[in-house]
Length: 209
Image (tube, rainbow, N blue to C red):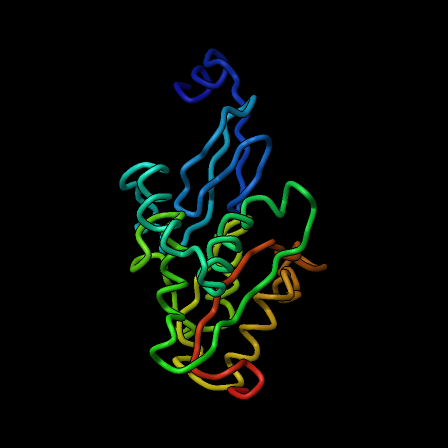
């Protein structure tokens, strides 16, 4: 009875629930679930990322510009990392596809530093930087949680096997999950995402595979 009474008397409010981050109903959902903007109706994120704790604020945009971005000037690889990071939330607004950049060279070439600089736009790099050591499903979950966002993936050589990395890379950069049947018949709705990924490794993807 109490439940019925509350439903009848409480003001009706429609919530929008999204299973992926990014732009949704006039707001931007961060991978940690924070909602930026003031949508007409409230929205919430029904997903999650293993890197959620890394989305923290430290300093100001001016201090990041002066102490991080300024030092990347003149270094093509680092400038590419910053540009890719800043482009991530814009691709959905212009209806563009997601893309990935794989940085490969020897261990002292600054690949991880570039990924960290790119990740610093969003929060604490050490917590935001994920690894290729995971299943295709786990990486697909992260891609969905990083829709319209940056996904830093460190050291392709840590993948469990070349076959697993190939499956994960195809899933990530294809922008769509695996086609699956529904238990009640038919198929489940296909999971899709637009993600900008920065990957690192000592070998290029083709050689590693």
